[in-house]
Length: 223
Length: 223
DNA sequence: CGAACCCAACTTGTCTGAGGTGTAGAGTTG
DNA sequence: CAACTCTACACCTCAGACAAGTTGGGTTCG
Image (cartoon, rainbow over all chains, first blue to last red; front, side, top):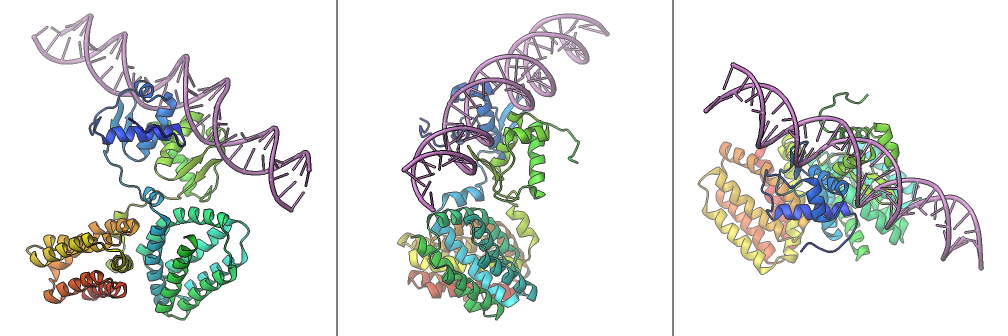
């Protein structure tokens, strides 16, 4: 039996139901699904809703619809979306991965930072200090500073990995800030300043340690 | 001036038009799009069609619609294919990223490894020792061992990141092996054994250092 | 008998209008 | 100034109608 849980949009539920039946092998790869009207009645939703579900799966590359012909299965398994992974896993896992990336990036940045990088980091640091009106704004300036650090490592792969995290981390951070604001704002800002200083003074070990300490601190604050 | 070419579905054209305007920065990341009726009229399609376009982009993780609130931009760019990124960047960048991921994973593995993890790692180590007939086979058993280490960290994000690297690293490794075989095979195998032993003895610092030393050694061998 | 044509049934594509449900902000009240 | 209420507005869902395209069977002609 399909899950009777009704969380959220009907179209999303329909999409999940369809994906389940596809993965179960009800319609083989390349084969045609029943007509929209038939399928809609079968699942118990309107045709428009079913069409939105089909579009959602089409966007993921699972289905393809051809006018006049039908809807066909194009791929049995969705390339596990990176975004989906980040939504599913725990915040702790994400933080550990951030430690891995940002600490190493900080160490490399201490080696390779240019004067221009340093200026950008200090500018971001100043903006972080200046603005904490809304949680959204603070999250943005904070992420901007962290990104500058990673960018200063001059490693494209690390930067790409970091950018992959940004959307998920931003959302989580805003949630956290609204639930429990930073209690010691000064210490937090000082920790970030220390990180930038370590990079400025070309001290890889200190930079990595600052980064690691900050993120494990966030981890501890959450638990 | 949107493309005047009208090939195929209107909904697909609308989706492309939207994506173009999003990438152009018309609506910043996390911001709200105009209402459906407004946007539909603006683009020149019906509401249902626009909704299907939105679903298509939502399936790709670009948009997210919240009932009662609006439609929001979640990601400026569709997950740039890792394959493409990894092909473009230098081998050195990839190795540095591997250091970040594998050293941290090794440290975590030293904390969290189970007896079952240990067995799997030792099995992989034995296979690595036994087989070096072809470059392909050796690359496979080597990557298998490294993957076991990351898996023993019990961090899904790190494992996912590592798996993203595997295809590219495998190809590069095979190329390198054919060009310049490992000169001191015994030392190489011993280094891997030392890594596994450090994890077995729950020594995070040593595990991280073994991993880091090995990968920087590979880096040096390439330059 | 075979091949080209025609057409009717069925498919997806699009539009419209109507309600339902949930959110956020303005206004009010204590 | 804080808490509450309420209204406007957003997306969500459905039903029906017509347009556009594909398919396959029946018909017609060579």
